[in-house]
Image (cartoon, rainbow, N blue to C red; front, side, top):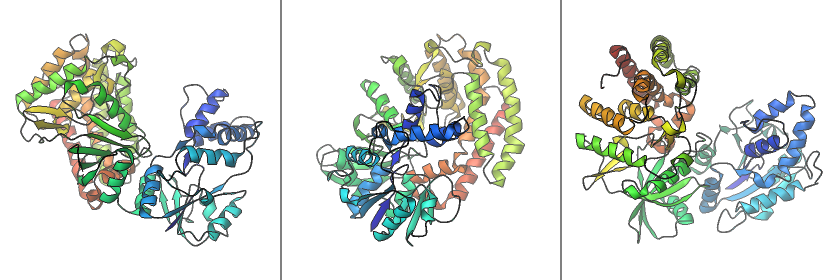
Length: 534
């Protein structure tokens, strides 16, 4: 197969570079965050905006080209093309010089140098032939070149390219979040979907190749582990090191949280406890990591000693060095406002989903309860922490998604897994999430043991009891909305990415998740907001 790829904004990602250059020029504030398109929209609304935009384009595509990133998922796609024997061509619409660039940097040379630095032409990496890279001055010229190459498929972020008169009758994949017309055959908003569309589901042979690209050990076998959260997991049997786990994290365009490095860094700082897997190797570009294989069993029956062991682990985590240097946990809730805003944001996204059952639940059950619970909570929350963040001294280190759903029992000792969301947070969130998590199966007395033990661990926090009671129903409602993530396209894509067998089970899966969310709301209504376990 002959595969054609656009370059700018398809392979090379410029969001971060545009932000850097705009801040350097004083065009936006230092805390500004947004995409290339966000910046373009903002600058075009200013006086002489078009000229300013062209000037910054000249800087980004020229002297600052080396700062561009490879789009998440491209590395995997190119490696699989190489392994399957497909020939890759790059055809880019790129002029000789950039707009208003005083350095007169050759844009095409800058692009080739960037490709070189990313391993495009390296036989040990992507192995694309340099003579397979073409630049065109106009879109029409680009379409003509694509036609002359007799390609089977072409991927571009601009639908206008496909609408050119000379564009050939081949498979056209639009890399975009939106589609303006029908000149394409498929639209994909991430490279994982592009990869599956062109190359199919990854095979064990290809997994072995990817493993060996960063882990130079003989591989005996690869076994997919089904049904694990948002990441793909494989058990890899090596010739001399026993078994290891390959963790293939969700596409960063679906979920921009840097789960891989968060987990790697977390496991490294707590590895001395000998209750977590050791880090073996990782590759940020491929978004994969290898961890020690723990030959344990999932807990089918939880007893009180397991609760005590979990509490001891949390206590030990608080004693790691350099706690203040750790990043915030994913979706940290350091104030009432943080927590309320998270629920409002989730509610807003779900309210846009075209599903009548979901909308009935949100309108008739969730929203009235949310309005009531928010008012109830605000009246009880410590006034100094409603809008102001919890002080650093009162923040804790939290594994975040912590519980027995992410634990294995080996030789009567618990090993804890999954630290993708690890970081600084409010102890109240850790305490409440442990009890509310739908994957946990605790008795009421075990919930009480957990909460009593956690209050003791974090007793230096003078407001912890008041804050916990005020937050209790709110974290329950937050979990009700988390359960509905699969109704969102990105949430469903992450589930299917981790477990392809779910692809044909969407309707039943969504119904099940909605019923769980309803159960949480009924529980809060029944308990009249109060936590019954303390």
